[in-house]
Amino acid sequence: MQADPRQDPEGAEELLRPGFWLAWGLDWPGGSTAEAVIAVAPSLIPRDTLSYSAQQILACADLYAQKRAERVVLFADLTRLLTAAGESWENLRVDWKAGLRELEGGPFPGIFLSVSEHAYMTVCDSTPGSWTGDRALIREAIARQLEADWPPTMRNAIEAGRVRRAS
Image 1 (spheres, helix red, strand yellow):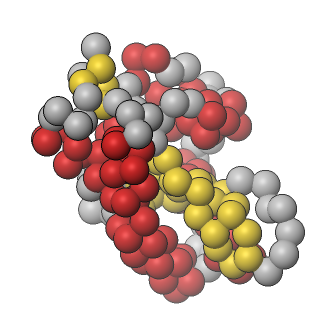
Image 2 (spheres, rainbow, N blue to C red):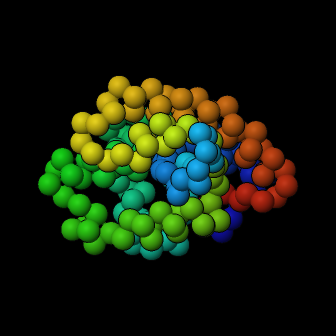
C-alpha cells in the first residue's frame, strides 16, 4: 500500500530528510564537471520489490551507515569494506552492476549530482586506502549538496504527486 506524503506529515518528513543516502558514480560523460553521481535514500525503497542483488547492496549500505554514522555512503566504500574482509560482491552472488542499474532506474526518489572529475574519480575508487583525505572532504561536500537540494526536490515531487511513500 502506498501512503500519500501530502496527507501524511510523518511520511513527508522521511522523504524530505532521510537518515542517509547511498551514492555512486555513473558513466562519466566528459567535461570538467558533469552530472555523474546519483544518490538514493535506502530507507525510502521498498525492499520486497527488488532483486536479490539490489536488496543486498541496500542491506550492506544500511549496516555501513549504522556502524559509521555516515550521512552519505559511497558504493565504493562498500566494495572497499568487502575487499578488506577478503570478500567480494561476486562471492556473495551479488550482481552489483545490475543492482545499481535497478536502483538508478527504479521508481525511487533520487537525485543526480554534478561533480568535478576529481570528485567523481574519488567517489568511484574502491581501492583500499586510496584518496583517504579527499574521500572525507568529498563525502562532506556531497552531504551538504544533498541536504540543500534533496528537500526542495522532494517537496516538488510530493506536490506534483510523483512521489509516494511505501507503507
